[in-house]
Image (cartoon, rainbow, N blue to C red; front, side, top):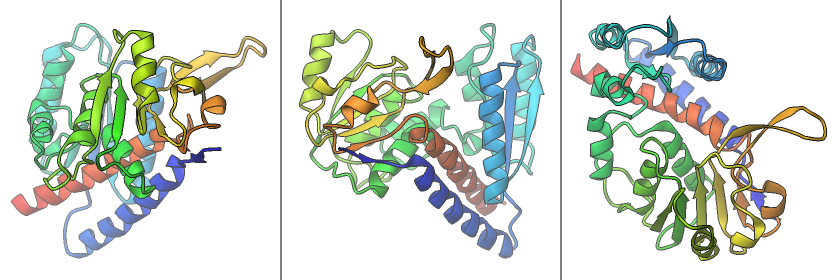
Length: 300
């Protein structure tokens, strides 16, 4: 049976480390780090995600607030709000909860956030630096995946890794961080990476996965990864999360991309859903906020 990688426990450990570091940072005379979230519309899932982030911020010693804006706000009005926060010396981190309404250009919004306050790491500046293996604010979910493997001593150097999913905010950054040179600024993991996606034929996907020492899946397709696709002893990181209805009970539950109960019988390590990558995303957002605060403090 696979060893279960407990994302909640690792996230709690990281949170405590950040809390202690912030306490020391403030004792040196620095301002308490501050995070502002922008929530456009009333999507229930987005509201839950933002509330969880704000609660965690309080736990680690980061002050925070949420700007809730109507779903029909114009793109220009939203960009004006972001510009105001960019110029607010008391704000260290800005995150715009995605997705935004369809009439707003998501990429334009992400690029509007000041690069030094872009704690989501979604701006072209931070993405570009990450892809060039330079120090940057890295998207929280990919950073959380990498940190989970580091803290669980998963061997990556020269290993074969398959990343399933090529989204610009999750799959692509994970692939970059997995394959890049660990001697450079991102401290990447030196694996040999294959990227698969929705147009990868199922037989090809199964072939690539069966050769992989590490499988990282981020598609939102429940049950995509089955026992037969996994090499014995492989590390399986499940980033996918989907709410489904149990046909027998009528109740809803959260599941990942991996057939957890079956795959855990052959894998060496596996993350659960929920309780795996999700808590790490929030923890690394706090890490990025504190990193941004330290950078801004040096500039003042």
